[in-house]
Image 1 (tube, one colour):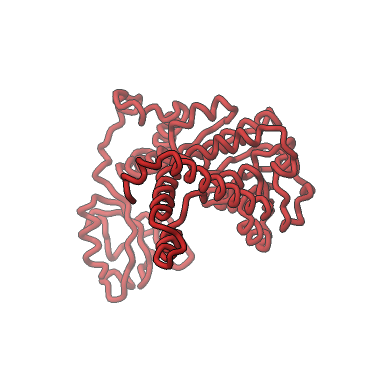
Image 2 (tube, rainbow, N blue to C red):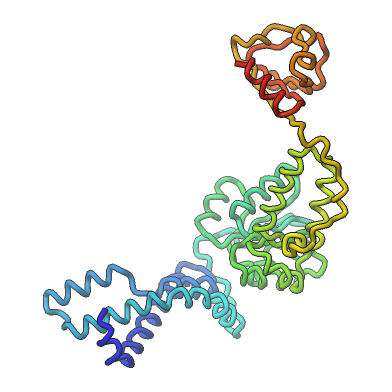
Length: 378
């Protein structure tokens, strides 16, 4: 790009840049609307695709080689293309707010909600009462649906990805296409009779809008929102969320829970600690000055103990011998807590219990004692 050319004709190049961005944005948004997506999605797609693509450089250079366009026009086009790429991150960042502003205008409901040309089951599902509403069918949504099915909890899924909706419907999932930020879509899923709604979408602006709409439509519903960052917790609580689960801190919770478990802390103490962290909105992680807790008195005298599972391999000196004969407690200082044999688990086995090839034995002892025992398992 010739910087001198950009400075000399900055006005024309700026207008060319805005024209390219506007034209591509409208084409992308229009194509998305024709495909049946809601207006909000169409606007965000338009902003995401509005920059000039790299292939245009090749076309422009070829055009200049064949004298279809001149050198000055080529430089102008090149400058506008590069500027459009530089502006794209900012436009994508602004897109959710612009989309929300557009959707708040008095526009036809059919335009705002989408025309759903490929979905024939958009009528209100029958039998939804006291159900769980899952908004978003990513990893969290899938796991939640699987757990609800296992527990026999009635549920319905709302997803804006048409391909996912088609595929999951074929598998028998109660999944429906639509934008959860639209009142008519939530009404179709009988949100007024739902007990719990879980918002598991990655867009923080959309999560806020959906949370506020859910609370307005159903004041008594219990709303759980999954977000990525702790900075969004306060806003979502103010909008009506009962529980907000930030991924970045839940990962920390899971890690420290496993660390405490390895130090042999009582499970009920660990769970109480986790509850305290969540009730205080993860304040322990956010404020490093809060070092002392009511758990600081815990005795770590069991920290050198460990529980491990060892496999009995063919040829091991333990094979075809009873626990009485082996006497692992005397010889190696470990205690056998359980034996897993195929699908059967023998808890707290007696001294007369035999050990066989491919058994798994669960033992309690120090790390060094377990390591010594592992050497004779091969």
